[in-house]
Length: 92
Image: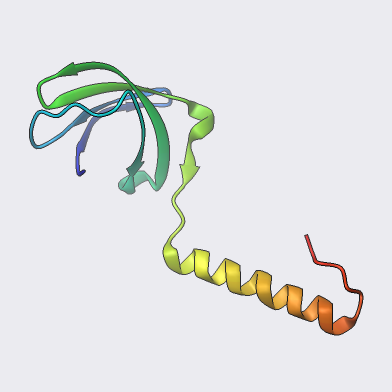
């Protein structure tokens, strides 16, 4: 669901939705403008606005699908090269 971030700190946020809704007690959300994924826990609700507390340790950068595909391809290429070299070990 789309929302507007009305207030954001390192450990919480106020989110506003187009209409009143009741999210689950805990959920993950993405702040596209900051390139972050966060895990939030609902602490209050007032109509279409909700307040969440976030775990600062759970802030993760958003990775594009293209980047994920490239990472997988590079790992597979690296493993294939290791096999060709004959050491038989999978790279870390």
